[in-house]
Image (cartoon, rainbow, N blue to C red; front, side):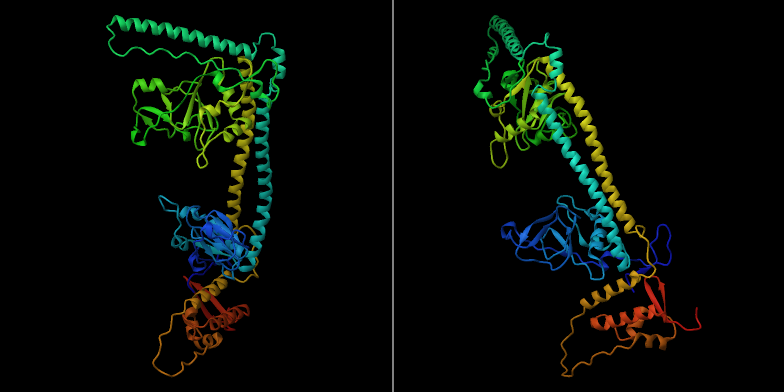
Length: 577
């Protein structure tokens, strides 16, 4: 019979004799889900609603009755879910009613093993064509073996789940520990012993700020002198061209008051509270450019997507621009400059640490810090939970949050001496290196768990996960049952007859009688036809013949031989062996 391939040998790459092969479409139908907008869902109903990424809510009506599978059709292509109760599948999914002869969870694991995502051929929105799924070759085990396979898979997966839970817990604990180390560092506790050992030569943070302010004034005086010389030369040249611009006097930022720091923790005596305004040379928003301005060679323009949580710049996809020398001088990034994302994914921090020509894009805030301030010290603090909370709480806009410089500079930052800044950065990097190694190990182990799951499924669906039982009814008979049921469901519509005669019900001849009369090999299809069964026959007629076929085979009264895609039947003679 078409669709079932009863194996006769069992090599390393073959299946047990009791397994059978078929096209997936010969067994399963992928039916379209039905649209159900979020606004139309009851939300409090008893029936789960599934989309392509899993359960997305509840409704008071169901589309599919009983246990079935859900397959991602659009979006999360090929994702497989199972519902043990009535449910609604929306129009981004297929749902699969599993034939009664197949264990539903066996089908569930089979569909996961098939990795349907590989069939996605779309270029824009990911999509799955069910006709491609129907052409997949699958292997089916006997019904009793399906139950044993499912039990073994779930036993092994349960052990893996326990391991994954342990690893996820370890990941979460590492994140908590990382934040604890940061908090410890910016309270001055991480370097407490070092600070006591180096107390005499260290300047205080206030002395550092005084030195920074003095250097600013000295730099301004130097710029002023250079400007006066430039003006003098311009006048001597007949005031030709534009008059040189006078340098801007450095802003004097008042120190933070007790009111600004009243709710903050107490710092070591040599530390002080500051804001970014106290330690910046300047801050600016990046310029806006259109993607039409991008070229193959030029100055790199960094976007929010080019800035990573690691603090480094990702150059892989950063576009390039042709800009004038004056524009580049105005916006150029230097080593140690700080970049803060200000829209969308706000508060991602990076330190420019590359020897490349680049400028910051429109959605980045560019800070250049004064000398004696370690940019990586500020970077680590801005990544701390307190700083990230400040960014979130002080962002504006409901749909797409935004940060601005005034709100960023409301954040109080603990500042030690230059030497202690460097020491804190060194100690954080040492600890982070160890934590990064642990996290990488956990990540690799989690990947191996996923590989191991696939390995278990591969063994399961190649007949090598558990031992076969020779007493199990072959899967070929199971597939014949499924095929018969599908044929019965596809009965052709009868034409209306003008005759008033009532059609005579077709009688079914016993299979044993047909085979005894033939006394030679008959294909199963021909034998059924001789019995009076053909496509469009009543389901009970088909079932009766299959029950007889199964009983005759069990009683060893007939011989069954596989020829290509068909089974052939013959009455077993007492003289034959």
